[in-house]
Image (cartoon, rainbow, N blue to C red; front, side):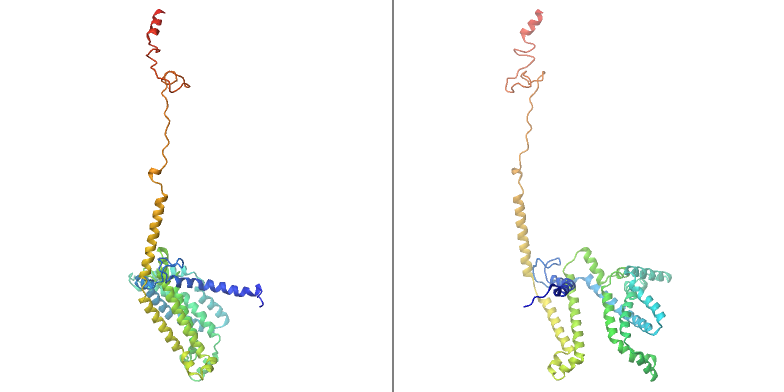
Length: 399
């Protein structure tokens, strides 16, 4: 067997690292959504649980943020798609010099930072509301309204780029032929150009909706006192995460996969090559139909929801909690054994006693500094050898 050279292995290694970097975080988030740990983690694994999905449903702030994001996303699609389509059609019909200038103007919002767009949108509508003396409850200060128009400024440019890539392949003689045959410009647009642009409209719609859903830099300024999905997630990151965020990721990934599978099956089903394959095989034709695939995926999704609702992990969670308590108790006992008690503590050092010094610098026995401390002590002012002894006094009188 011939071994591959190191150079031949480099592309495979690069692709492996690329897909690991791309899909690794998603896989980790999916795993953490089913771990009973209170913090999103893969290791150490505790219990398989689906409780985080229930906690997600019970999180009012997150559910409200998701609802606001869906409303804003739909509003952005409704406004941005017509603007982007109109800009693309205009660019396809003007001269080269004017096209360059208009293209620069239309594409400029993409180059502007989202923070600038958010602040300028907030200030602009505030000035208009002040000019009309509108109350604070009016739409001039409504977070949903401000966010939709703030996001439209750059998402419409994204849509325009999608439409431009499609309209460049359009044969304009078809529109001219329709006009020559008596069709009005509106009829030529609706029956000739619009069907041709349908795939681009679908792609631009999905792109605009997802761009609106994940936007944060502009939304955090324009949403005012309301909240969206991204702003709620941002607050959770600041104040502490739990695996309910991973549960959100699992739901989004599942919806994306279902949509991608149905879309791919539909494209392959309508391709000419596959049409020839299934022409004489009715069973295969039914099995690969997009409706059949969608039905199967729908049944699997319903089954997953029922499993999440009925699965009970309380027994495993209680066992893990008991093990943690036992380990904590063991650590406390070990700590108490390692900590010395007062009776076992080292005795305090004793201060040596100092002898009492006499009038001549010795001890009380009349000895010098080097005399024995065990010598009997005597009074230097009395006694047999004292200063006031009788013989000393008599000697003083004779003198």
